[in-house]
Structures are given as structure tokens and as C-alpha cells.
Image (cartoon, rainbow, N blue to C red; front, side, top):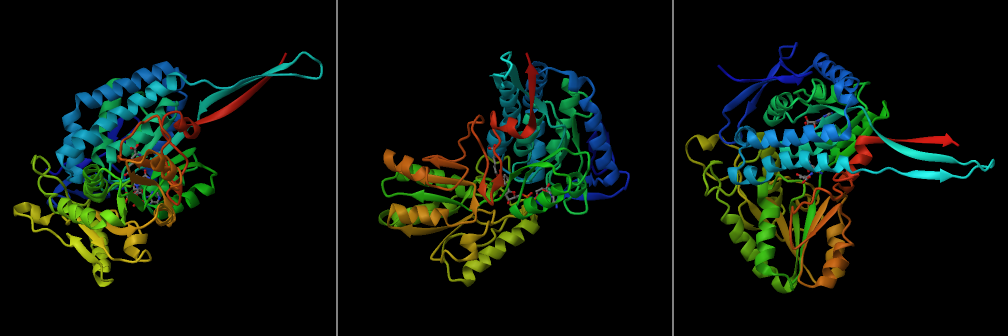
Length: 487
Ligand SMILES: NC(=O)c1ccc[n+]([C@@H]2O[C@H](COP(=O)([O-])OP(=O)(O)OC[C@H]3O[C@@H](n4cnc5c(N)ncnc54)[C@H](O)[C@@H]3O)[C@@H](O)[C@H]2O)c1
Ligand SMILES: N/C(=C\C=C\C=O)C(=O)O
């Protein structure tokens, strides 16, 4: 009997009324993981109605402290069921246990903890206001939840990125309707069991499955009773959602695509630069929005850096998630692999120098059906190449030399994106000087994906709108009301 993935609405696991289901297949070996119910307008409307009703039930009457306690209980229950979340995430993505057990699942719990703690200590402003009659007035601000929040999520870090939205939304007293990616429905659904187990009231957390256009995603973003939309995904999808949100003047938070650069100066710690760049280029099979697809290396160390990065790429052993020797998993799907391979072909056609990879590995047995691809390093392409301009979202990067600091900054900033950057230097003054000039939301120096969840996170230019993280999430997940009292 094939397992079915149901919606989670008003505290109940329910099938779709339309009877439409779609396959969720493992990227490892293309085997069927589950048949997923596709939400129609009726299911999306039921979820939004449940979320609306929960706002005026027990949830809406809870204090910030009471919500914080429940969110800590959610985090503890995720940790108690760690292996179930791990297996569910890996079933959908094929990513190595070593990655999901250190990044995806721990962050699922950590996201609830950080926002449970943040919401307990939030001050708002107060003014004593002079008045002509001399008696004065006082003004104070209240933070109130926005209401029903739609969370539209991507497939690359499913639990991490979904809870990065749900945790602050609930901490601030909102209710949510989550639309996970059609590629990765499992952990968002499993979280429904956790919500029930710890006593989050029905309707506070809802999950509907489906696709984007003319499916659950679009029905949710255009639903008249959704107050705010938090979206993570491709820039062009973000643009479509902004258009959908416009009619209802809905608040939107956009975490979008990137074409991130790494700058490697000759004075860097080469071993650290190679280790860090290998992760930023190839981690999660290159499917991290913060990942590095453009690398600029100061000329004196260019040849050595390219040689060593090529060696590192060739050392990324693909394999089963539970094999400790596995260093890289597959891409999320054959469809995505076709997209990434099209850039591999573009690079070849444009005469790139192939340092490592460039093709599809031969995998044994049942793994031969997986969406595997070789980690790839190129040099020799012009900055105008689509391979250097467009987000590929695979385990590949292009490396080119630079001669001056000013040139490196110009090259790094020459992109319509502005999400993340990495900078490798042992010169402290240069680290601060250059880091501040990179037009991105987050710049790492001698590090990558080192995250303090209290810091502002988000993209500039076409990489996003808004910042989430710590108190910055409150700006999106609450409304400020000003109350003025005449004394
Ligand atoms: N900035 C960040 O923090 C961040 C984090 C992770 C991924 N990303 C980006 O996400 C992309 C990869 O994820 P993806 O392929 O899932 O992105 P995607 O844009 O294809 O889909 C993201 C989600 O949006 C839904 N969707 C698609 N079209 C929609 C529409 N018209 N209306 C409503 N919902 C719609 C999808 O079903 C999915 O759930 C990459 O571009 C990556 O850079 C950004
Ligand atoms: N939003 C975050 C990571 C995004 C990763 C992109 O793929 C985070 O670490 O909070």
C-alpha cells in the first residue's frame, strides 16, 4: 500500500476533496516515497478559515510567555523525534545524513527556540507628549499579530526554511498556512503531529500541498483572507507572488535567488579558503541560496587555488545518505538536473576550461536512477556568460583571477542579485573595508553559512525584500499600533 501525504488543516490530517494526488519521488533512486494530495481552492479556503478562527480562540488570548513556552515544547518534540524528521527529510531530498543531521533538523528546532526567546523580551516605544493646554498626553506603541500568514517554501532546506518562517510567525501570535514545495512535503506534514502533541491549538498551524500556478500556491497567495505572505524561492516566482499579493495589498517578505561571489585574496589562509569554498560551492549539492557560484581569486594564488578546488571537487564522493563516506547527494529532481546540465553544456559550448566534473557520475545498482551530477569547476569564461550571470543552483562554480581590490569588489557587485558573499583574507583592515562594500544581505569573512539567528537575514536588489531574524522578524510578523491618551 503506497503511503499518502495528507493536508493538515485545523488539527486534522485530511485528504483533498478533488481526489487529485501527485507523486513524491526520491532523488536518490526515483522510487515512490508517497502519493501527495493536491489542495484545490476548497482545501486552501478551509485552511485559511481554520487559521482565521484560531486567532479568536485560545491562541489569540495567549500571552507572549505562554506562546514562547509552547514553541519551546515544539522544539523539544522535534528533537525527541529527531530521527523521524531526519528520515523524512532524507526521503524527500536524498541529502547525506551528515548534512541533514547537522544543519536541517537541528535548525528546525533552533528556529523555534530563538523566536520563543526573542518575543519574551520585546519593548515598544512610549512618548510623553506636550499639549497646548499644558496637561500633556502619552503615546505608546503596541505590537499586534498581522493575522493569517501564508508561508510558501522551497525544497532545498525544507524544514529549516519552513520553520524559519513559522517560528517567528507563531511567536508573534499569528496563525499560518504553509505550502511546502511539491518536491518536499514530508517534514512540514510531520510537524503537524508535533503541533498536536504539544498542545498548539487546532488551526494555528496548517499545511496544504500542491504546486504554484493554478494550484495551492496561487490559491493561497490570492486568498482574500490572508494578511501576509512570506516566500522563499526563485526571484521570478517572487515577482509572480508580488503581483498576486498586490490586489489585496498584502504584506510580503521575499527571500529570493542569488549568484553569490567569493573573493579570495593572496593573503588568505589557503587551507581555510579551500575548505570553506568547497562547502560554499558544493554543500547540499550546490542547492543553497547562499552558495558560491562565482569565485574571484587574486592572481598570485589563482593557479594553486584552482588546482586545489578541482581536487576537492573530485573528492566529493556521491552515495547513499547513511554511508559515512558520502560527501554529496543528488540534485532534488531529474527536472532540476536537466536545468543544471544545460549550464554544463553552455559552459562547454562557450569554451570554458573544465577543471573538474562537467558530467553525470555512473552510480551503482538502484542509485543509477537518481538525479546525480558531478561537482564542477570551470575557468576561462567571460563575465557576460550565462554561466557566470544566472543562478544555476547546482554544485558548480566559475573561477577567475583579479589584480586589485577595487576590481574584485566591482566584479562581485556586478550582478542583479545581492544575497550573500564570502571573503577570504588575513588582512583585518581589508576584511572590514571590502566586506562593507559588497552589495549583499550577508557577508562572511573567512567563513560561510555561520549563522547567528539574531542577526538580520535577507537579500538586497533582486535577492529579496525585507529582513528576518531576531527582532527583525517582528517588523514583518507584527503590526505596530500607536495609542495616544490625552491627560
Ligand atoms: N533567499 C533565500 O533565503 C533562499 C533560500 C532558499 C532558496 N532560495 C531560492 O529558491 C530557489 C529554489 O527553490 P524552489 O525551486 O523551490 O523555488 P520556486 O520559486 O520554484 O518554488 C518555491 C515555492 O513557491 C511555490 N510557487 C511556485 N510558483 C508559485 C506561484 N506562482 N504562486 C505561489 N507559489 C508558487 C512552489 O510550489 C514552492 O513551494 C532558488 O532560486 C534559491 O536561490 C532562496
Ligand atoms: N534562511 C536561512 C538560510 C537560507 C538558505 C538558502 O538556501 C537561514 O539560515 O536562516
